[in-house]
Length: 285
Picture (tube, rainbow, N blue to C red):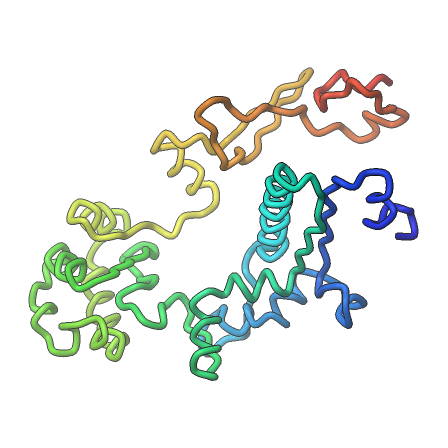
């Protein structure tokens, strides 16, 4: 508002404007709180369910709440534009970090609201499914994500442990959840006899969801192995810039590439002009 860019001011000259407001904790009593991702992860409960049971609460490895809030803003703006097509009127879109996080807690939020009991940290385990966790093989860790009894039967066969299927401690998912530590012990005893990559290959061939715990570099290589378009290269002058690709793909056209990020001081003194398209060379020195 202090710059004259508030909604009320803009709407006088353009009643159809779609105005998006992004805050940390809304425009009410929380307006004075700093909207930092780490702070919201703590206040919003995410840290309380992230990390090892006996360890400290932990944040997610990226500024996830910021990213999700941006996506909510994007969706809200598209919704307002779509509504304007029929009404002719613009609207105010409001999103905040705190509400975004609470809505993104999904099943953990639903459980808390239904029972009044807040969930605790479980490491990588799932509160209601087993085996659905990170397990140690001889050389590194892998994930096994068994979602039903049929998949558990397939897992037991793939690991050469068919007796697990008839064990009363593991015969149903509810029983496996109750005896998850006993199950972990038996699975890791078997997994320790081979490499993680080898077990992933065996499980995948048997129809059991499993995968390595990849580094980020390995993750890009893994995705590219399936032919996914996950890396975009932009060349300009003597430089080439690589970045993660736009994840939204349209059948009718490909996402346009921009320009390489400017070098230090490269655009000092540059001025915008109406025909600018965002590509290198459109901003006169």
